[in-house]
Structures are given as C-alpha cells and as structure tokens.
Amino acid sequence: MESTTPKEKCGVCIYGAGRWGRNLVRCFNQLGVVVAVVDPCAKARKNVEATYGIPTYSIDSDIPQRLWKKISAAAIATPAATHTYLAMRALDRGLDVFVEKPMALGLEDAKSMQAEAKRQGRLLMTGHILLFHPAIKRLKTLIDRGELGKIRYVYSNRLNLGTVRQEENILWSFAPHDIAVILHLIGSEPTVVKATGGNWLQAGIKDVTVTHLEFPSGERAHVFVSWLHPFKEQKLVVVGSKKMAVFDDLRKDAQLVILDAGIDVDATGQTTERKGDEEVVKLPQCEPLLEECQHFVQCCSNRAQPLTNGEHSVGVMRVLARAEIDLASCQQHDRHRSASG
Image (tube, rainbow, N blue to C red; front, side, top):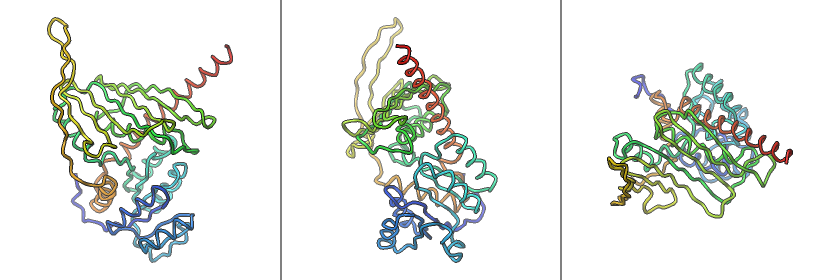
C-alpha cells in the first residue's frame, strides 16, 4: 500500500559494477536515477564511464559532496561477504538500500541490517529477482485464487556446471532464489528444515545441496542446487490437489505451463491417474531485473515497503541458516562415521 506522503526523488549510488553489478548499472541508468558508481576495479569503472558517462569512484569517500547531495539510495552488488558492511554504512548515511542476494552470509548480520533500517527509517530491499518474473507473478495469482487447489509439494532445481564460488557455498549462492520464491508462493515460513550435501572441489564449501522444507499447513518442498552438474536447469514444479504448474526459466517459448494432471482418489480409496490438458500461459514481455529496479525506485519515492523487504529477506535468511546448521550436523556425523569405521 503506497504512502500518501509527498514523493521523494531517488538518486542511486551503485556499489559494484562487475559480472552482475553492471546489469544493475544498466537498469538503474535506464530509469535515469544513477548518480555514481563505486568499484575498486579500474576496468569496470572505465567500462561504466565509456558506456553510460556515469562518474565512477574506487571508494565512496572519493565521491564529491555535490553528488552526495543527490544520492538518497544505495544499490549493492559486491561479493556477498561485503554486503553487511556496505549496507550498514549506507543506512548510517541515511540511505535506502537495495542489496543483492544473499542479503548477508549470516542470520545475525541480516537481523542487524533490518534493525538498522528500521532505526533509521529507511527502506531495505533484497534482490530476489524471481519474485518480479512475470511467470512467478502469474503463478502466485493462480495459487491465491485456488486454481491449483491445495498446494501439496513444490520441487525446485537450480543446476549448472559453475560458476564456483569461494566466499559462499552452493546453498548460499543458488538456493536464495528458490527459497524466496517458495516462501512467497506458500505464504509462510517452514516449521522443519533439513539439508544434506557434499563438497568435492574445495574443503568445507558445499558443491551440491538438497534442502527439504515442511510448512505449517502441510505443504512440502525441496530445493536441489548444484554447480557440479552436466547441464543447466532452472525449473520449479508446483503440485496442487487440482492442477500442477511448471515454471521453466530456460524455456522461453513456454516458461509457465498449467497441467490438468494428478491422482484422484475415490470413496473406496482407489486411485486414478488423471492427465488432462496442458495450458501454456501467455506472459507479458518484460525484464525481471528492470521490473525489480523500478519497484525499488518507486518504493523509495513513495515510501512504500518493497515486496522483498527486510522482513521477507530475513525469513529467507532464517531458512538458509537452519539448512546450514543441518548441513554442518550431517558433516560431523559423516566424519564420526568415517573415524569409527
């Protein structure tokens, strides 16, 4: 719900113009709100200056005061280990903050960011881009209308060969996307979180994880993520009592399909397989990242809470933290079993 307070002009300082940050620079620049870009890499700065004519700096303390007067928000797309430090600095300056996922690399850091945003009266938004994807928007509408029936299970696979991280494991790198979507679709946090995984490339950094979630109303979900997989897959399946839905982010011709399929059970307990029509849902043509950036700018101007605000983002972090604890427990069990064997 939008605030009735006067609109504020949004001016954004972007931290990080590398592999993903350059996409934020492009989208925020398209919206006409970029004031400055900060990146320690000279090559990245030169690319921004040559492409967009935006002033760049190696550290934000070099930004002249005349530009700081125009800056009301920060967008952070730096390595995940730096998110908390930069976000807290920005909030302390009185800026609204957009931070890429994962929000932080620890639950307590995430809570501190949320608390500081509240204390400063500023907005805090995490870049959970899939919530701005037209397929996920439509799927959420269908679920809320009851068109799929009672949600029973959600399967989510995010698999690829690379990109291997060193500062975060596969759970924290890939799974925030899927966890954010699942919490959004189901509308609650899980009561049970279990996780298992393995690492082969680097000591102590998981390459593959499977996270199982159980929700208060009986829904179940699992998130399978890996950067050690022979092919790329980004697919989410929602199993309802009436229908099923498949979101395949890599299939551009049919990203969202609704299937009149399931197993019907009669009064005697007999089961019948049902395979009915498949509907390819027509979706509007839009770029989710641009939609996400525009949402942040609008929230900053209207002082409205973002869809992926601090509360939602900390909820995602709680699931990640619980999964990480279970992973560590499994690893200790494996070590004990190996030692005793």
